[in-house]
Length: 75
Image 1 (cartoon, helix red, strand yellow):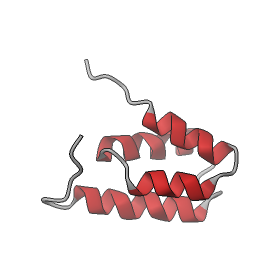
Image 2: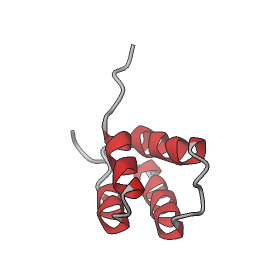
Image 3: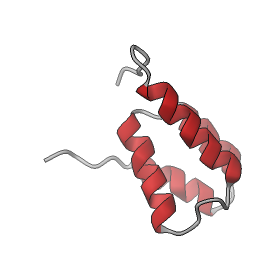
């Protein structure tokens, strides 16, 4: 069974307290596509999609970048 990452919860906590700049900075250095998708799911589950438009854009852009061939971050 895969270990769940704490990263999405921590970034979502940044959003909850209103620190979108720090959240976007973390999104830009996201460890993996899976973590970004978990963050996106957490935002959707909390029904706040669209509340932080710049965050939604950052997630989409970085999902596309990390999904591209040969572009990945080492652990």
